[in-house]
Image (cartoon, chains in turn brown, green):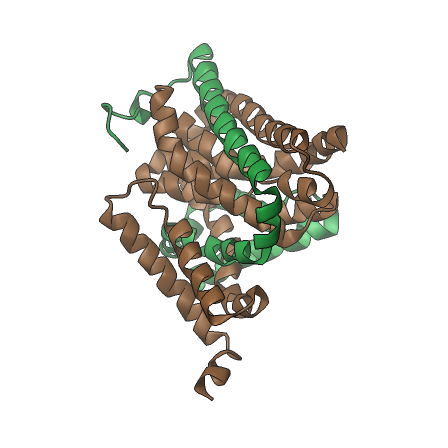
Length: 233
Length: 127
């Protein structure tokens, strides 16, 4: 009786989402901000387990979680703030940013589609993979235009973001890249908002550059993804 | 706080309407962000009002990706079928994109003399 009331209201899954996120951030803090303890990944695993335990489908979950999902829009607008605060730095770095954008964005789309295509991935799934490095709302828009599937695209985007946020620090340390601007910009282009959240966790300058990398990549991927997909189609 | 949130939502709204009306490839919130930067350059006072809310949103940026991420559960069957191909494509291309992007940035920055000594990671920390 109480359960059937709860399952019809958005309250329970909204609460569960916030609690799972708090648990994820608590784990991240407990490890001293280690990159493998990614709060999004932990929250997704907890909620995924909870959904399968209670036999709840994703559509029911999303009715509650959509309020959190909605905040992606305002948060994207809010990325303008670190941009404004770092305007003098951004102006100075215009040329390196343009070069890194073309290289990073092109690599992300071409290599993902080449590898997946070589391994037999086709059609809807390939189209859903193409915009994986752009921020979720943008990626879904691009994938729909290419004949991809929105929720599948969201999954690819999420996995890319989590993986990127986990590997970025060891990878760029290995490549001996000490420039926070380069580190931030590259993760923003390759791993959108989750990468940007990771960048802000580590360094404010990296975060600002990551935010602009994410924004620029959203625009560029919208242009190049259809061209690259057509080449593999 | 409400004023700040309302201003941010207005930028998003204008962005959404403009991209649809003009058929731009840029998503609404991204255009909203660009408009906010332009507005902030013209009137810095506006940004003072937005700052607390914007900082609160950015501090919890990860949270907003959780609902979409839980969508993984809806695609378990596909992941079981094509999981290896997709995992390879995502991991390898992400490693390549991050590495190449950062190397190109650093290379062009040195080439054009636009390095920034204040933006260097110090020492060889583990983070």
